[in-house]
Structures are given as structure tokens and as C-alpha cells.
Image (cartoon, rainbow, N blue to C red; front, top):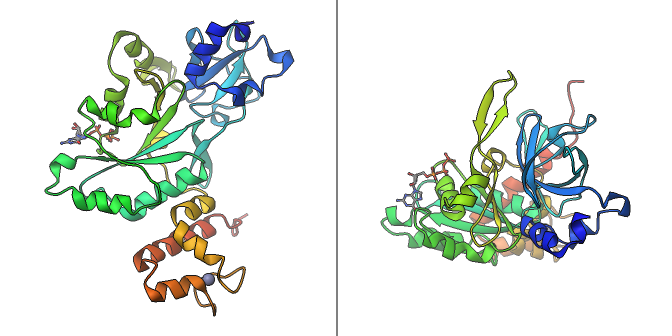
Length: 331
Ligand SMILES: Nc1nc2c(ncn2[C@@H]2O[C@H](COP(=O)(O)OP(=O)(O)OP(=O)(O)O)[C@@H](O)[C@H]2O)c(=O)[nH]1
Ligand SMILES: [Zn+2]
């Protein structure tokens, strides 16, 4: 039904739908409605369908923790009972204090890592964000705010440019409308951008500028009322905001406060110049700490690898290795 009509296809593509999702829909599922999850709060989920916002009903055998904002699900057309979640093309997760993993956002195309030209600018932390983006297979963009408050923003830009190869770095003042122009490249029909970064760097301001405050947009992004655990109504904001001119900003508490997760492959991308040398080490399993004929240690001695950067790679690498080791101890 719905999916065969071109006009509906166009709206769906605007939601972020593509053949990647279309190919997953079975013939027996043609009557179901695709919905993109825009909000998850405890057991409640809502999303965007081709006909606008809908409240979803979770199937009895699943928990909202199995879903992430940005996910596409297939739901019954009448009551929006969720039948199935479609596979994701990207997934951001975060590791919780108790060791469990929380799903922070799905089907994100670009991660804006937001930091300011002040004390918030922290190279090791930015490298972590970059590694996480790499691990989640999401293209990172470094967004530098508060250049106007720095005596000289040039050193921040210079450090940003050295963070990783081909990393786009954009200086914006989130309070100004031209922030949209500067970031336009990463938006457009169906594109999804997520925001991460510390408190106070300008994320909310940027979301407001990107999403605008026009009529239809305000209705979509506006606060929604949900029941909390005590049955009271609380007001929370949707996490998926439509951007004028097409695309979505995914801004959720879970993504704002990403922590170190699994990121071995992500590290390889951020520290490419170190990893590439490793192929020239004598031993395949070289740890680049003490081995003879280690190309990495040789480069370090020559000064062709930055020593501080190497030690940060070492630290993240060790942390990641420790983090993914099987759990021992108490039973
Ligand atoms: N001068 C200046 N102020 C800015 C800039 N970007 C953001 N601000 C201000 O910084 C303050 C914090 O911005 P927010 O958007 O609330 O920051 P946030 O990242 O959303 O913070 P949390 O909600 O705590 O995560 C606001 O008063 C903004 O107006 C900038 O480029 N220059
Ligand atoms: Zn080596």
C-alpha cells in the first residue's frame, strides 16, 4: 500500500529512508508502516511516519532498551504496534557505569563533535570522540565554537587540523544564522547528524539555530507529554529535530554524554599514521613497546611520529584492550 506511491516514497526518503531499508522489507510486510523513532522515554516510544508523528506500541517481548533514537521500525498501520526493527547502517553506543551498553542513536550519517576555543578544547578527549565515530562508522566533523571569546583562535584551529586526516573542521557561532550555511553540506534530504560534546559548548544553541523555530518545525520539535514511572505527565523534548531545507539533528542525552566504548577500529582511523607503520614491524603481533625491529618505535626515535600523540594512542589502546577483556572476579 503506502510504499508503492511515489509521493509517499519522497516523504519517506526525507525521513532518512533508502534502499538499504527498503530492501529489508519482505513481501509479507508490505502492509506495515515504516516509522523512524524520534523519542524514547522509559517504556514509551514515538516516531515520525509519512503521516507525521505517531506513538508506538512496544511488542510484549521487547523493551525500549532494544531500540535507539533514529531506528526504523515496521509497525501496524492502525495502532502502530511495532512488528520489527530494521537493521541499522550505523549505531552509536555508550558504556554505562555498570558495564552494560546503552544504544544512543542509530542510522546517523555524521557526528558533529562540538568543542569551544577555551579550556574545553582537549585533544585526548577529542581523539576519543573521533575513535568512537570511527567505530560506529559515522563520519565525524569537528565543530569549533566560541572563537569570538578567545584572544586568538588560531592555535585551536591548528590543533584541530592535526587531530586526524581529512577531518573537516568548521568554526561557527551557534547563535548566528550563518551557522546553518557553514554546516549545510552535512544536511539535505534524509541526512541525519548527531551532536556530542561537553556541557556549555553550544549544542542546544546550535540545535535551535539549525532546526529554526518556524510553525511546522516547532510542532515537530516541540515538547511532548509522556507518563513517567509514577504515572504523572512529564514534558520532555523530542530527540530528532527536522532541519529547514532537509535533514535531521539527533540530539539526545545519551549522545551528548558518550563515554568510551569499544573502539579498536576507530583508533586505527584516528591514529592512521601509527597503525600504517605497524605493517613494517618485524613481528605481526608487535605491541610497539619493546620489540626489536619495530617500525613504530623507530619512527618515534626519528621524531617522525609525535611522541605525545603516540602516548595518547598507547593509553587509549590499552584502555580499550582492558575494557574488552572478559570479565573476571565475582560470580
Ligand atoms: N560568545 C559565544 N557564546 C556562545 C557561542 N556558542 C554558544 N554560546 C553560549 O554558550 C552558552 C551555552 O550554550 P548551550 O547551547 O546551552 O550549550 P550546550 O552545549 O547545549 O550545553 P548543555 O545543555 O549543558 O549540554 C549559551 O549562553 C550560548 O549562547 C559562541 O560561539 N560564542
Ligand atoms: Zn612495532
